[in-house]
Image 1 (cartoon, rainbow, N blue to C red):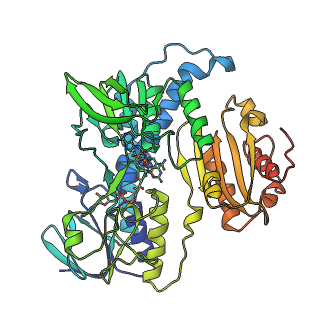
Image 2: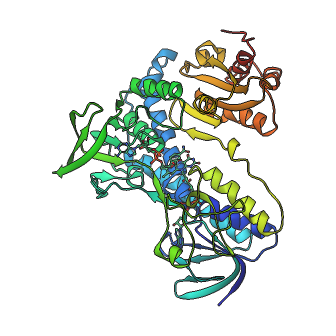
Image 3: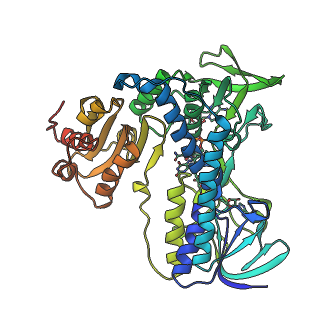
Length: 465
Ligand code: FAD
Ligand code: NAD
């Protein structure tokens, strides 16, 4: 039996970052991971292995393929013979993932964190069993993450009915990919395969895609993805499926109750993710919320003393950077520090093209709260750099308090939205105003001038539209 200050169960972005920060603060740390290949642990969790990184690698590859075939003629560049090698594209993605996974292994070594490979479970307070051996720790952090939700009437078989785990690894382009769920995964992976030549239909039971977005952003995104040929069936509820000869036929109902039938050779079920709560969690007396996430207080403490939880396992958005922030904060709390996470400044990005990036209060939430706000907007169509790049879909929106001008939220749909959003997030973290952004000199010609113009618009002083 070995004795640690901290044992972390789960080596995703929440768990491994928590382990590193704890080691930096002088703790003796072990991390348990059950995902393994060829006898070696695969560190990095969902994010590195089957989530953020592989999906972004494919988004980048498919964007280049599509651009080569469709986007260069207007620039006076003629390209012929553009051909697709899906196995090679997948190999590149796997190499990127492999390098990053190995990199986490290097970080564990550097920080003298012991990696325990196998299924970890809490068998008693302060005791974690891994592969038949019990290890002791003063503190235990649960960071077991999440896994795709399956629908009872849409059984995943890994061949025709698949989850994102499979859709990042198809060996050929589907003829018709039907995506159930118009959320982040559905749109990102839907766009990957649409760019590579699949017909893609997204079935969403709500009136808009990505329900967390203001309707104007969702509409703009739907319109832009529609230009690529992606078809959207909104307010349509999938109710069943039949599979025969590698072809799935979904039965669904439209808003007016009329039956809808959609057939495809692949069906991607992307209706959300659920926390990984194996039987031992409740057996250890750890309380869950109504939504079956691990219940924690403001210091990530579960209902059992000495056991903490972070990341996708607990409430809040299921995002890698949210898990990381929580991992750092928790390690600091365990070391006696008093860190604070401001959940209102955690950004959220959809990595489609155009990208969508949001932070803070939405216009819809402001209206619901009866909060008096001023909203500034600026379209990329009027931005010189966007024009030069022929990348003019979308707009920037800034939401500021009507009295104090403090920036309460921001949303960008358009080129480089994920990077441009950082300025709005930083302004919010510093308690800044739209006047602060408007008075900051932005280089010309840059996409970032659209952020400045949106800030000017909240003040009624927009210059270029
Ligand atoms: P996870 O990353 O899920 O890690 C948990 C780890 O715990 C896993 O490795 C698991 O094997 C291990 N584990 C579970 N139980 C045990 C046990 N009993 N013993 C040992 N090990 C165990 N987020 C973003 O912010 N940006 C993105 O671009 C993004 N893209 C995504 C794309 C896809 C396709 C998917 C599926 C997700 C994406 N996410 C993205 C979400 C992101 O991956 C998660 O929010 C993040 O990984 C959560 O981190 P975590 O540490 O809480 O859990
Ligand atoms: P999601 O919650 O983003 O979207 C699920 C969608 O499915 C919703 O729009 C919902 O209304 C719809 N839906 C649910 N049941 C349905 C049904 N029966 N028929 C039709 N539509 C239905 O979930 P996701 O796309 O699976 O992603 C899971 C999580 O992973 C998200 O919480 C997200 O935070 C995370 N993720 C993040 C990123 C990113 O940050 N770029 C990328 C991928 C995943």
